[in-house]
Length: 416
Image (cartoon, rainbow, N blue to C red):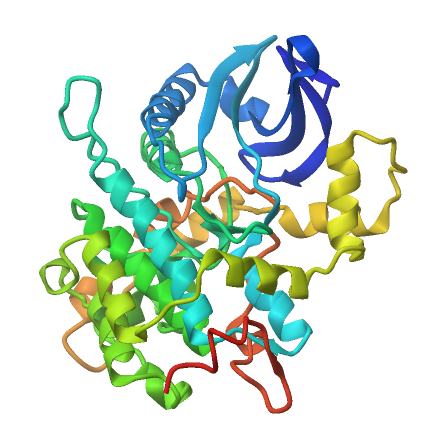
């Protein structure tokens, strides 16, 4: 990668994926103006497809209309010397997936009011996006389509930001039309609403289902829908009920459990009517959520000043020279890299879909073709921003014995 892309000075790599590389960059201007941003450059195999680039830029332009404190902003899209790129807001923080993992590693339990604040803020960002209007005042119809632990960022200032609106739609449409090999993040099937898995039309309520999965995983440390393969997970999403959250974390209130299960309803009509309604339901169930100062304090406890991982990214942001062998930053970049889908994997998925697996119950007919749907739908992988791969549920331990609760004293223990 060259060191300059149009007006952006490239400082270094943050992540690498099958469809894009992610770079930390700086834009400069008169009177000493400097601003850190993130630049995502599309891989050459996709950048050479004008239809895909146009579709992606269209979705990015729609998402660029978002102006909300809980949505990552897009500043610019374009091409330079054959390199297609999107420039967006830099968030000094980590994904919610990484936050949960770091808490487990440090044996620091995140209390319910703190998690509630993060999820409520994410819901606020989604609600803004779902009600976005275009320049003519018409509904933009923006649906995220890829809400997950990896697409919710938590900053050291305590802010929560949802990232990558609409990008999944462009990737999936390209895959449907061109059968193109695209990089993905594994494990997305567990976030996809039943209607999405079946290839039916979706609306904002599909995002609320995914947010319900995020809420379930954040509160319990477990996945609501499990399986050895994406097809098995999809079957669980469509036909099985998750373990009630209170069986995994008895301290949760019945009211909060009801919120989680309502968001995970199989039928869209049985979920919340809007992200705003879901946010208010979380707030009522918790009673008193934490505030952004509490979240900031938790982030500082998880990554104190001087922490090697945090310092490596800050060194990169400063523009100071670094050794290419920097083990901490290189490990971050490696962890952020997506797993490419091979043509063999797609072929095997289609072959599996052609032969239904006998099973008890009324699901055999519907199950036929699920693997084929996933082979395409899973191509709607999101781009990465400081995001190691998501943590397996066995690695997130809710409130293990002897842990320290990360929160201000005013927040108190997890809700009973």
